[in-house]
Length: 288
Image (cartoon, rainbow, N blue to C red):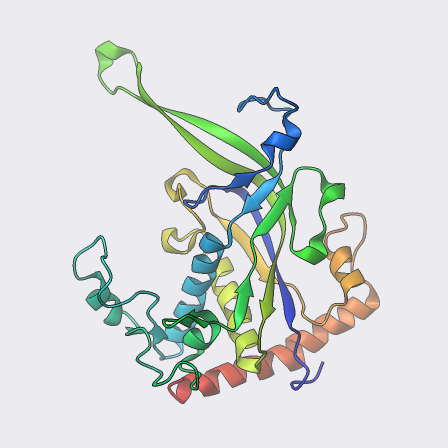
């Protein structure tokens, strides 16, 4: 791979014991239930889709922190006049390593802006350069196509009882809360670049490493219900040098790396990734 022939498609390995996302999970339970679907049946073989919204926000947060740690500022994801739920949140964000959304670009159709604006887009229907797909999951491993960014995962609807703390109530339930969750998720997230630049891949690699290194930090976990152990994600960027058959081998538990894959790992670590990170650092230093 030459820097003028960068990969358009990249994959992020994602593994987590439990995932609960605020945007909910879309299931195909109507196909699996055969008319007898029960939420709590452990034999349910239900797949579904994890929306790209929480995944995108999680990734962006990691990338913003990388930019901040390199003495840059990231484009704020929200408008200054938005109806934020907390008072002065926008101003506090600007003090914490952000600049106003779009302040880095005069004409979004002509200028690239900062690297975060360039990747994620902004106002005026300006699309970003990276497309974030949802993750389709299936409990049957043989039905999972990792080359399409899919994952093995087991859908369950969890029930949580909120009980009385008064001794005389003997922990009698006060109310019941239902939560859609995916357990034992193991697969990959498919990202596509509309336009590829070395700094994009550098920021993606650094951002994913940051999220993996801070996976037990509350602010860097994925999805909702983080107080209950959900969203602690092991993640890494799968070597972009791998071919499709090598990508499949990554998820084949009966096989290890080939010699060619080991060579590509050395190439990535010693040659390509340092060059991409250097391009990222240069762009941040330029204020972009």
